[in-house]
Structure formats: structure tokens, C-alpha cells
Image (tube, rainbow, N blue to C red):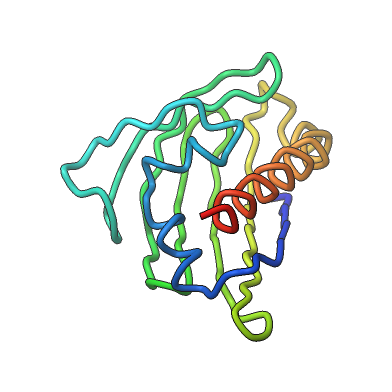
Length: 146
């Protein structure tokens, strides 16, 4: 299961960054690959929240069913996702000096055999890393821009 990790330092304290990140529906505002989010549960936050995310990277489109598996306000959010690619993801927020936050995004991904399996995952890894780094630049701009 290949792993991808990206991070950014944001000039805002964790509680301010969390206010943006906890708004799952708002992830489409800073995740370029997240086209739309539709909640499956009435719940919109916390463990058990389930939603479908229309995802697009280049010409590839998929719908990922995601479920929140970890919810630690101001500190961490974890999800499992099933779709073309399955796996687990986790955002962590840690203090990075006075009034700053290191936001880290980790994903462990599985590709189906018909989509290249482990080889497809290794080939896709740098693409995901590049897209997610760009997403974190957008998150940073959104948080710091107020």
C-alpha cells in the first residue's frame, strides 16, 4: 500500500485552521481534485460522517465513498475511502511555533488490479503528491486570507 505525505506551515493557530478543515463540504474550495461532496448521512461532522466525493485528476474521474473514522477537533481528522482507489487518509494539525500550524496530509492507497495494482499505485504516487501539495497551497491561502 503506497503512502503519500505532504505538509505545509500555515500562518494561523490550529484552531483557526481547524475551522476551515472541519467544514467537510467546504473541502471543494481548497481541494482542486474534489469536484463535489454529497453527504450520505444527516451528520456533517465527527466520526461516522459519510459522504460521496466526486474526484477528478486529469482525465480520471471517480466517486469515492468516504467515512470519517477519526475526529479530534483542532488536531486530526481521519477517513477511509472506497472508489477507484481505496485507502485511508489523515489530516493532522500541530503547532509550528507561535500562531502557526503544520498541516500534514497522509494517505495510504490501494489500486485495483485492473488499474495496475501496486505498479499503478507507484506510478500515481508522484501525481497525487503534486496535486495534494497544490491543494495545501490553496488551503494555506484560504486560511491566511481570512
